[in-house]
Amino acid sequence: MQRIVFFILLLTIGTSAIPGKAFANTQQDENSGIQVGDIIMEHILDNHQWHFLSYGNIHLTLALPVIVYSEQTGWHCFLSSRLLKEANTSYQGFSIPTEGTYKGKIIETASDGTISQPIDLSITKNVLAIFVSMLLMIALFVSAARKYVKNPKGAPTGAQNFVEIFILFVQDNIARPSLGEEKAPKYLPWLLTIFFFILINNFLGIIPGGANVTGNITVTLCLAIITFFVTLFSGNKHYWLDIFNTPGVPWYLKIPVPLLPFVEFLGVFIKPFVLTLRLFANMTAGHVIVLGFMMMICIFGENNPWAGIGVSPLSVIFSIFMNVLELLVSFIQAYVFTLLSALYVGFAIAEPKHEKTV
Amino acid sequence: MELITPEFGLLFWMFLAFFLVFFILKRYAWKPILNALKDREDSIRESLRLADKTKTDMELLQSENEKKIVQMQKEKEGILQEARSIREKIIEESRMKAVKERNEMMLATRNEIQVEKDKALKELKDSAADLALLIAEKILKQKLSEEDARKALLNKELNDLSLK
Image (cartoon, rainbow over all chains, first blue to last red; front, side):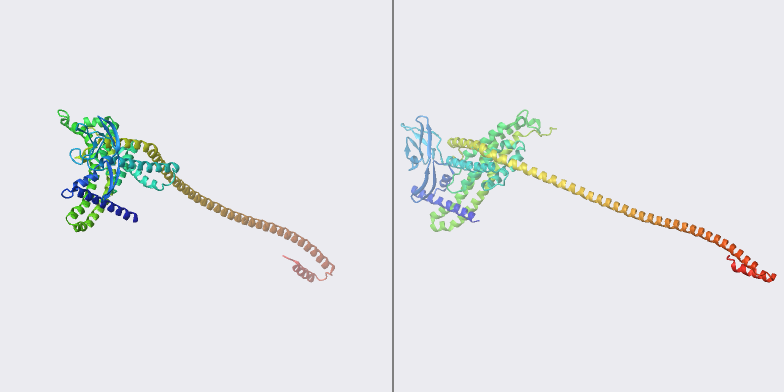
């Protein structure tokens, strides 16, 4: 119980720190009012540096390596602090504009003034967060696996307990019902990896200062592409036959205009697309709402500091509520993504059970 | 718009990291864990099956034992019954034998008595004849003076002597 209270406290303290930093930035900009949208976006989007918090002029920021390939000048590798110390600093012809079409992206300005976009393979905030979460997963599961090897018949202990609940959950409630008892073991490693990757990154994303990995469309797209290819390569004859010659529908939906086959074929691509959007939208929306509640303090505080103080308890309470809700959503989204992936593959590998069309 | 535009760099690293971790985890984590879980599942299933089997075996054994006990009791009853009947038979037999023996003995005794009686009678008759002779002699020896007195005396003597 104490731990939970401490955790919630940590969450609120952390999220409360965010508007402070926003304040500092906006005051420097001397723009009219607080750009709430921009501040929220900054927290949700990927970045070339990992900004934890700022207080006054002290900024706690982790500079990350920039790796770019330019067609003119080849490979470049340097720390992002060279570009981000001050706005619009350039280094070796590279810079990150703060607005315009290339806002937040690395651009290269050639000697004749032409602007081009190099291939950016930088270790950004999200990339680093992915690495961290992956290392966490390896540490957690390999150590758990060692315990299983060392003591195969014994009752699980420690981290093994925690891991086992989820592994059994994925096995018994996701893999086996959707893929069947025999084929489940083949796909289980993949399902477990995506499940834990999403779950751990969802959790890490809730922690203030954490990166919004699973709320990033690139990451969810990547996971969905993997599901797409797994489905594609496991699909048996009947799966493709059913797509192009859907059974149980009148012939006139297929013969002159292949309406249904077209719809079915589109479905092959729509499914991973929906997977991408669902996870991305759910996680991002959660973060936006939490940040929005926190921004309320700044919006009210801008007019009158007392109004800001007055509204802060409400903001904190709603943020706590949203954070707890996000804990739940984290689990649900990991479950849903994994379940749907398993189901899509399950459809693709299912043996025909269709009744003959009458 | 930036929010929903995939980044090439992130995609690249994500794929790289994901596949690397996937293969590492598959080899060093999922395989041993899933194998261990399956082994445990199997062993639990096997133990449950065994326990069930043992239970049914025990039940069978118990019912057999009960059957045996019932049978033994029946047998015991039978043996006791037999013993009782044998005892009664023996008693009856010995009684019959005793009665028979007694009867036989009585018969023999009676015969002996008869023989003895006959013998005694014969002896008596003999001695009676002797006596008669003696009396006759005595009478003859007496002076047979008076015919009437002699006759009366003879009658009287004979009457006194006759035993039957």
